[in-house]
Length: 332
Image (tube, helix red, strand yellow):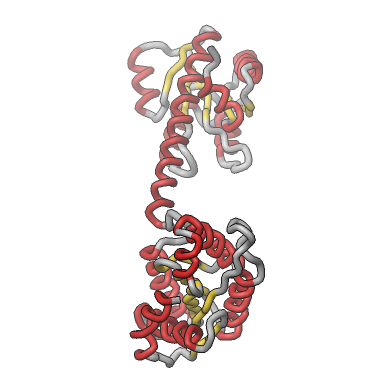
């Protein structure tokens, strides 16, 4: 039965071979290539170290001869482990030394495995397979960690930043704007009449609409802006280094992106609109103050007819509008 870890590794991993003996170097190179691996073969430790610094080669499994000109295999193991750059590299140290103390020294230097010359080709393949299995498991672990990180910071339905994460980003961008003396734009975006959509088409259809609209808003903002789901049918966009003119442009683009095309996933298509309130926060504006200002102008957009953008001055804090905004949006 084929080794699935090895088959997968062939497509992802480059093997670096460093051996000053041309016969062994050629043997390593030919066997590894016969087994389907990509191989970089060099004749001394200095060239091996140079190859390890090249991001385009990025060898993940390294076969090192102990005794080589320049940097020897032991020193290379130590350097690789001390660098801590990039992903983990599996190190197979090869030597004619076979005493227990030599094996211990090699493993203490950072080698993952040890192969004694002369070696059996079957043993070489088995040790390479073992290394590839470990590298494959490492990749799975890294992916699982990344998935958990994404789940912790993103909304499960829309894939946008979660409420907590986007509020953290707002704090960060406000601090950045304070340091640089630039404005931070904040858009509060609310779907119009979303309750009617849920009542008429059901909550599953409502989820489809939310996902579609989230994608349209994400595509409408600038590539370096942040968009998050604030709650329910409400979204937030954060624009760094932003002027009122920039904010107006992006907000209108988002509004048109939503209203311009019906949601095709709903039978016969469904036209959806959003109301958008926006402010530009300058030096000294706190997170809650910026949110209150954006909420106030969003209420103005709702009150004045929906499907529109209202950009308020930084000093505008309409507390009465803020108090009634939630009730206004929940009803339509």
